[in-house]
Length: 185
Image 1 (cartoon, one colour):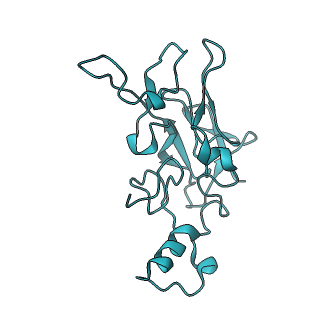
Image 2 (tube, rainbow, N blue to C red):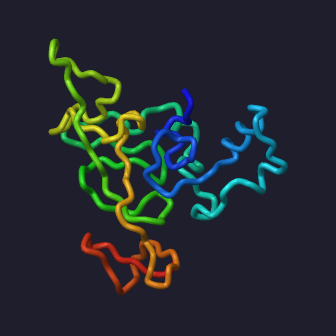
């Protein structure tokens, strides 16, 4: 395709949709260089490193992040599927509120439903049925281009009135409607 896979490169400028603060990775700069259309003199110094000290989507998640599904199959009936990788990049409860992976915004776990074929009643994308064995077996992430993997879609910036970045903190005195506390790092 003409874009990086969103499940693996969420937020990257070459991703098919940008739902968080975009960044340019060394991979994209190397691709531009290798295409022959662009000359990037020093790729390592040109990549965007302002994104949470270089912590981009999938950073230090290991090979399983790319080779396995985003949510692991349910092992016990009634449990929710668990996210691949640590810290988790994927969520498993609709409308759950939490910090985004880069700690720059509050996000909401956006869910949708997998469709079934009108003719056969079978799931159209059975490989993305991450919630089989739960009370909501056809639940899935809301973004098809991310393989229906549910993740926190930013809904509010985590900035104080001076514009300085803030992150979730358990010892801060201010809190949000979601019951989370925020303060300086």
